[in-house]
Image 1 (cartoon, helix red, strand yellow):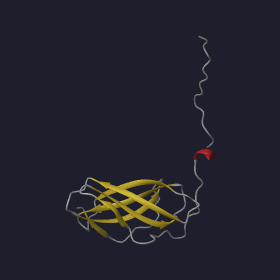
Image 2 (tube, one colour):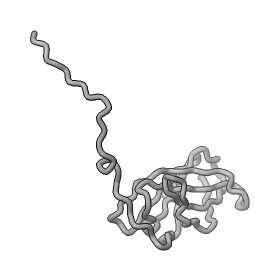
Image 3 (spheres, one colour):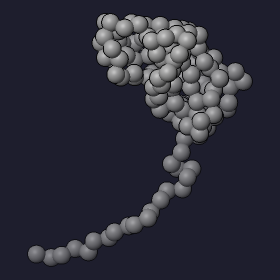
Image 4 (cartoon, helix red, strand yellow):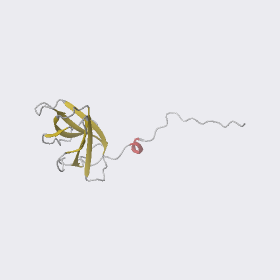
Length: 132
């Protein structure tokens, strides 16, 4: 059996421009378009969805939900990453919350930020939902 040479490439990296998405122009004012809503609620989890105008900036953002059983103390946080599409005028955020208690009312607010931690300033009003 004839042995073929093996070519091993180590440390090969593409230029940064080939690995990253283009950034979007930063919106003058990021805002929630319509009210955030519960996409799904189970006894132990929920998915909250909301839409904003495209926040622009870095291509990687995070949807943030601050929540708790006391409307004056939203002590828990759920975060989900998202990649923006600079060609779209709007961005849909979806955040899954796990570890919920059945038959419990939770209060929450939504927000978003760039991957570097810079907030978009899109904090919603206080909302609530109940697990079945």
